[in-house]
Amino acid sequence: MQLSFKNLMKSYGSRRVLNDITIDLPDTRAMAVIGPSGGGKTTLLRTIAGLERPDCGQLSIDGELLQFDDASLLLHRRSIGTVFQAFNLFPHLTALENILLPLEQAHGYRHPEAMEAAESILKRFQLEGHADKKPAQLSGGQQQRIAIARAIAIKPRFLLFDEPTSALDPEMTSEVLDIIGELRDEGRDLLLVTHHMGFARTAADYCLFVADGRIVENGPAEQLFAEPKSKELRQFLGRVMRY
Image 1 (tube, helix red, strand yellow):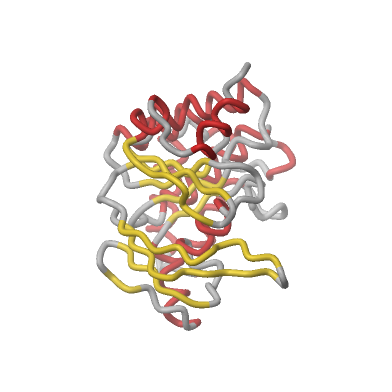
Image 2 (cartoon, helix red, strand yellow; image 1 turned 90 degrees about the horizontal axis):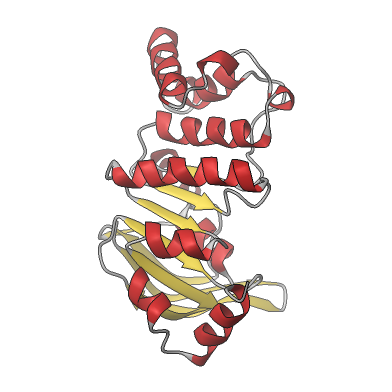
């Protein structure tokens, strides 16, 4: 996955959350985005996902300029898999139905094909025993695994994860991070916003440090953590990796 930004800006009222971002990022399989809360990481990811329109500027993905009209954004959103921190499962549907719905309604699968794909992905994540359960009957870790399975079932161009473990306890966090690591090892392109610095350092090929609406520093993940160049990143790592 290769990303390029040109003069990208986004504000909510008087608060500017993306501040004139212009950068060409190298092609990478797994990219982590780290930074302080409120610094712009999630807005940047949501813009890449086609869920936010910038006030101005351009975004290219794999050399293709993303258009921000409704029709283009709809096609773009259907081509990628996005996993959120709050799971975003439909509470009135079973785990199986949550996976079937986008396959049939958004991607035009016939029911037998959708069933085959959904059952296969549930088995892949060892969730077949929970197929008929609704989200309220599942643990947080199981719900997030269903959300990841749903994102993968559509055969996305790449995967986006927005703090996928922030609502989970430590044991479930490890379980979900292991799954993301497996997906990376399979060669899937993914972009991850995370506050787990150890995982970002070891699982990502490349890392962005985002603060004050800017990409303050970027580089190979191991290098960025071992030799932070900016004062902002040194201070940030000093705080979050103290304990």
